[in-house]
Length: 431
Ligand SMILES: C[S@@+](CC[C@H](N)C(=O)[O-])C[C@H]1O[C@@H](n2cnc3c(N)ncnc32)[C@H](O)[C@@H]1O
Image 1 (cartoon, protein in one colour):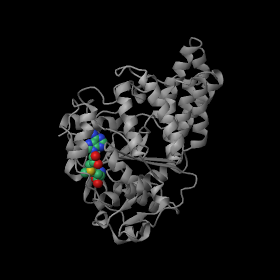
Image 2 (cartoon, protein in one colour):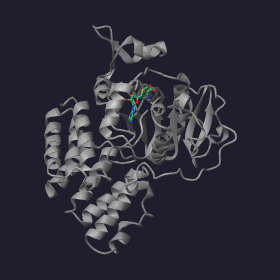
Image 3 (cartoon, protein in one colour):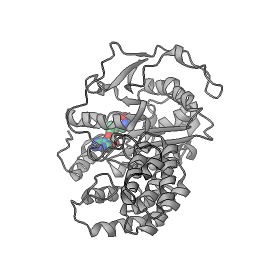
Image 4 (spheres, helix red, strand yellow):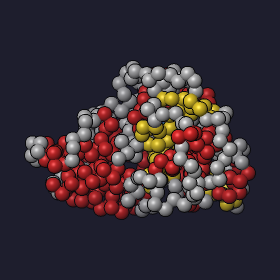
């Protein structure tokens, strides 16, 4: 069992050796049925006329079968993704299996429960008797190291904010109940209003998920962030042509009786350091912020407002506010860093890189910007540049005491950051 009091290092060693990274494609098919027939179509319909953005997180992704199944489902429901910003984040505490996940090559055993079309339509057989995922599906998923027991989420630092759907299946069973509740509390804050949480059948407990509305779907229960409202077939607009053929409407319904909104869970939120969605009420447009004390205070107030907007998934507004703030104070490296974080969320990697370089030009010691740049380079396939950035981070970290809290890193200490960096280097094949 994993409990929070263990150190990060101990948890990782335990996770690597004790937890079973057992996983396979289309695990619990009824959950993927719900994803394809209810959750994704509904999300797509509501987003079609606004910000065309979909954000999904597979937390505890093991060797990648779950996030790749999600990518395949998304591809089936939304074959033409032009104009959409789609992000599927897949995280795990075990850097070794992350490397395998990234490769997208799977043995026949991974398909033991999958429908025949999945392997046939989305994989190529390899000479060694394995199956390689089509690159267009593989590239839909970004893998990253994240320890659910210790890391901060939601955070734009690790792209865990403003999620529409979180899958965390067959992971929480490794946690003590108290830690599991903290993780779920973190997921609650990561989700947008009305967002979905998918957990494994063995982990269902209305008590543990009491801030979520349980929704009965054929053969499974999925959870929805309270306030989003239960699904009502009559209230939905007619299906739009780009969606797949309407499937017979199953009896999706809110599980009765729906638990009343629960008071906040006991204990501090898992994302204790100034969770962005708990920021004070947003100031109005920057014009108002400018009437605040001039200089650094105004920049700080803007940064807080920008973070709060970003964390609620209001990325265009966050970017607009950030652009104004940068225009008002071009020399503030933090604002350039924030701009980069938002651009990255918007899948505008090139602009994000330029913004990070500007931040580093202004503040060469902004460690978090070196780290973000390294991650972006890694995703772009530039291992050499990524290594340079991570070496810069290591150099800067070596000058700091272990317990020091890093600026702009949402409460992360130097020691913890070093562990995350090392896991990232290992998962990225740079070790
Ligand atoms: C049984 S696998 C589940 C894989 C997939 N979600 C599924 O249902 O098929 C459990 C995964 O959880 C990961 N895990 C365990 N503790 C974790 C933690 N503290 N943070 C992140 N991942 C963790 C393990 O490394 C393992 O890959």
